[in-house]
Image (cartoon, rainbow, N blue to C red; front, side, top):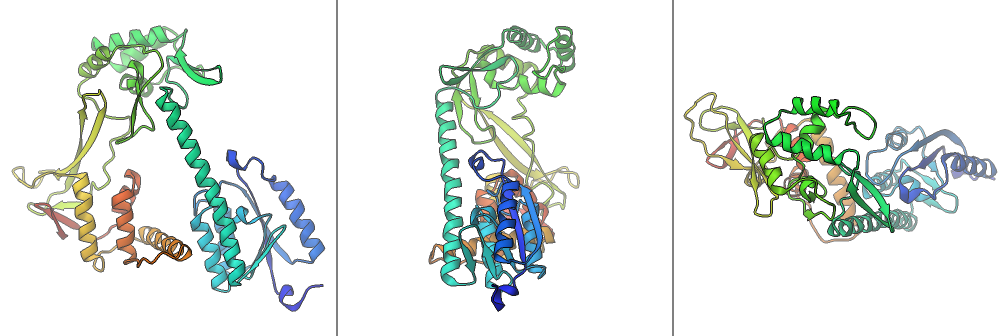
Length: 423
């Protein structure tokens, strides 16, 4: 029989199943729903809605139905959750923080799982955090083990993933190796010779079509794929994994289809090396104005060939000289610009205007950081939200994160002799 408190609880039944390999042993959504409905009926729980989704919970804020669950709690549509296990709700710090915040606010009164219940009680909340943190620990450890395995495979000379056109993947003796494709490898080698003689990409495509060379799906090879193949060092015996500026290069154990000399001839015949496919992205382009002439600051990349045959990408920002062709504002490379921007934000954070999208990211990052510091009881004082987020993005963020960060800054800023000021 329900007591007065239980009769006031309005439950949302939430079921989640991930397609991730580490959750293949979890119950199916149908099984979760069946068990939870039976439990609700036996215990007289008031179920006001059901939500279900197939989505990984490794990254915070990425599950649309879970976000709908949180929104319903905030809007007082229900004040309790029925789910199979704590890890159905959270396997990361961000989502765990959202759940605990709602309990602290008195919005979420009860979490009921198959074997446990949790209320806004310090001991029960702590247990919930331990169980969800354990799920995160399992995720992190599996990620580390997978990365370790991939790194070992790379060090043995075998590139993970699907082999480029001209090679095939083969499982032999318990090892997945890569061998030349008997139907395509000789043609790919000949393609490089023709490219070294100045053949254009379109002419090479026409020739491959005449030779009936297709992708593994039986389709004609796109021009974009041909151009990407011509700048792929895998064909002469080296590879980078994962691909991107600053990542490690490995000597492949596979048989090269071409020599390093032929590869270099192709690059010379086709002009300068243009970097990794799709790498021309400039995070801070459009953010700065030239402090000397008022022109826009643009960006360009320089690819440096190392003695090992690897390539290193450098990004430089400079005045576009459209206002003053003789403007002598010096170049600034991206690494130094990140330092200058962080110093500027730390001094002027109260005056900087940002859009709502960036503000939401900053608030989320700040909340997660607070929860983590509080949970692990680290004696560390956080700075202002914008400063903390800027430190994270400008020191650890990738190109995409820095681009979104720059787009969110509304305040116009300029640079003069490596000094950033407001316009």
